[in-house]
Length: 113
Length: 111
Image (cartoon, rainbow over all chains, first blue to last red; front, side, top):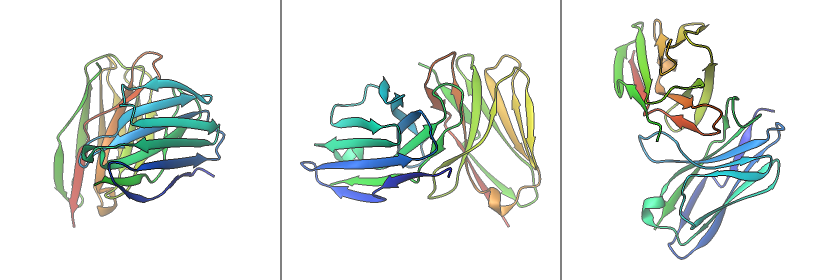
């Protein structure tokens, strides 16, 4: 199984809402990532979890809160987002955190109204 | 911070023509990866290069890593409509965990 799953596929939320994005992999990978991708732009790294510990936070605003409950799951909690946060949010995983290819999920298309 | 630029930004080719995208990093890379993203899809890993001057081939795709490990290229021979998508290089510096994606090259193949 080389699949990374993400739910939901689409999400529309207001600026006062609280929502969560979920990501799951069953490949035994020990590194998991959150990326943000705006239209016609490359993925931008937000967070890296290595062995279930947050190892990189790319100066992401606190309205985005990551969580790694176990080695297979990654969540991104959203609160008080802005319209400019609308984007495709991609989750990825890799076997290790330094030299291995990343497997991406299909992403969650987020619209903030 | 590290910057990774790709040229061209867009490329339209007739089916059967060749295509090349170039990737240039502002810093020396420990390795470089290439990904393909189809329209409406997510990035899919193609290959990783680690050694200076390394060349790898996958059928019609040829990947090169520069001698100075600051640039890379992807060449597609005899493009097909299935090659349509955006090609990203992604570089990693030193032992750092972070992979920086290049700006991408969007390939359109005209049948």
